[in-house]
Image (cartoon, rainbow, N blue to C red):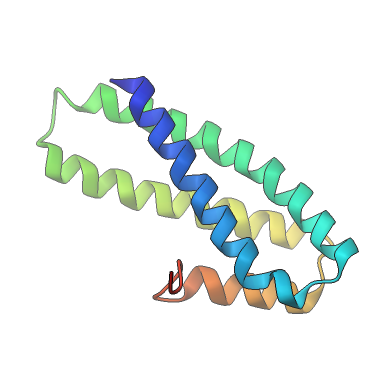
Length: 116
């Protein structure tokens, strides 16, 4: 059961990163884009590890709580972890101010994934 969930999380995170990159690509210089891509790939690894930890937590809880409540709690934890990691890293990395603003706006918007 854990392996298909891990694959789904990896695919979902790859899609999120891909859509974010597509939305900011036109605004970035090549050099800044390469730096951002390296940074995002590094953070994606961190996020995937966090997701695995959350999935382990979920599997431990499956026996104790109704699945709907558990999934709501898991989603809240995943979103919180994603925002914490992204903003902590944004504060530590010397990124262009415009890029920081764009990412912040994308993360806080109601339509994170944008139109297909």
